[in-house]
Length: 168
Image (cartoon, rainbow, N blue to C red):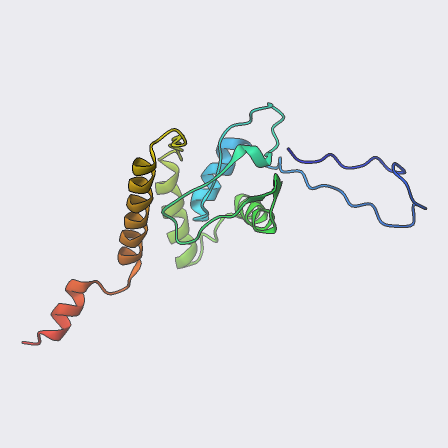
């Protein structure tokens, strides 16, 4: 849970140091945060607002698999700089609509409408009680999944390369 900001004048010291406010993450409702995270292709998911304060807490965030990047959002129970940057990117994107007069803006509008037809969903499994063999199997399968993602992210597939080698 985020540490609350100290009240002005609270704590020891002369008061000459500038107060450091703890950032709050409540600019967007949960559903909108998750929708805009998908639009921004960021592997972050707000699981639930467990304490109903409409503010994202470190224990309410999940890092998602199968994205072009990996998310490291929480460290030692606190948000990382990566989360702060991702959060700001999500909020900024939600406030700035694409330029409908440009070709790229029109493309972004169509893609956004397409993405908005789905709903981000988290499938979370607690595998802590699996046997050592089962955990090893899951680790291997995750490695396979990452390799498949890497293969699909490769601009030219093996088939494309084979076709290029066989010239008519």
